[in-house]
Length: 289
Ligand code: BQF
Image (cartoon, rainbow, N blue to C red; front, side):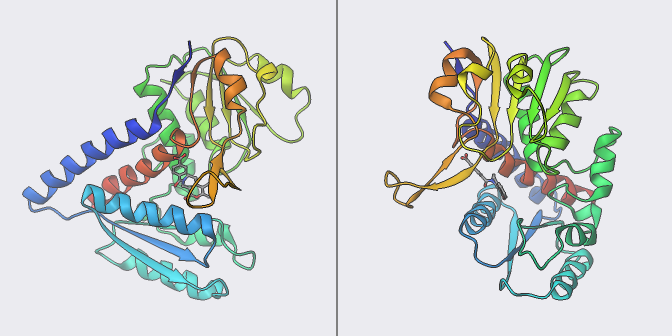
């Protein structure tokens, strides 16, 4: 029988640990961690993600600030706000919610963030530190995935790990973390131009699916006993939920789960860990000032 990796439960345990640490910081007269978030436009998913990040801050006792711009905001205005947050002594860390409208360069925006306040861990300085194994802020989703693997004592050393997807925020960085000393996995990154995808994935002890293509991973691609980590969060219309939407993963869960030793659900798997990683990065930023 397969085991479900309960990201929601682990995330709530970590939130408790963080909340306790905030109480200690307060008692010691130290600064309360403060996360700011910039939201551009009114994309439904982004609205939800940011609202939940603010809620998480409240839950653990962090201060939070939400800064909103309309969809048509000029890039220079956004960069000006980032410079302001970089210089704001009260703000420990901040994020700019992605994706951004097409007329704004995500790369320019990310590079404008002070790496010391880069709570999402997307700045090239933090990515570079991660690559060479120096401590810095880790990208939230890869950080969450590694933490889940550790808390479930899943063996990674010498295992064949196949990462499906090469995005800057998930596939590429998680492949780097898993191949590092300590994790010691043998990692293969595959993408839209990869040949013989099925044969490669079928050989994996650990599959990390991060492409945003619902039910892409089918049962005939999964080895008996594999660990499957589903990072997909595609929002589809649903009549079963009161919001009118539901999240679906990159894995055909019902068919794949019976072949697995461990599998993450969507929702309730990696997503809650992504959110908690942002809190961990913010706490680290607050302790450094
Ligand atoms: C869950 C994100 C694509 C593009 C931009 C919990 C989240 C998602 C799912 C969440 C995501 C995805 C976030 C669940 C943040 C993860 O229970 O399954 C939480 O909030 N995420 C984001 O901020 O920007 C994105 C995915």
